[in-house]
Length: 137
Image (cartoon, rainbow, N blue to C red; front, top):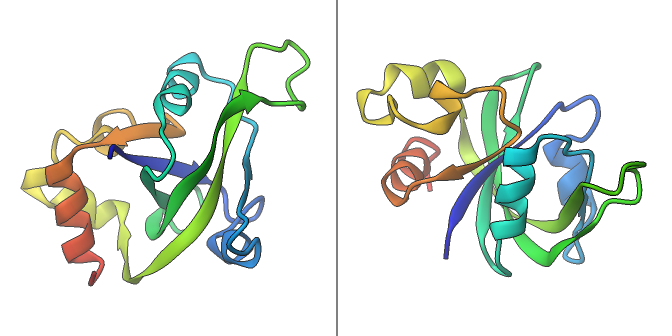
């Protein structure tokens, strides 16, 4: 199983919105970056991702799981981009802020630190474990 991080502006789609979508989950649309698209295409059913509130909050707040593989995003008029569906799995007991991640020497190479603008990014096993620990899971 691979691990990922997906970013959302909470005023557009928050962790609370994701939880409210229930066990069926919902689509993760609007990705318009080719590297982020490549990451979405690599996702497998059951892969988990950290749910990160960008702009407001700047923190990892929960974990989502892939429930539907990559398919075309109908909001993309060019037809070049797609999406996957996620369902909420679990909230972190303690959100892990970007500042805390940057302050952790073991996370200095994490994609969130070195390429913070990318909306869908891989997370290594070691990074996953550190964030879970910091988040109280």
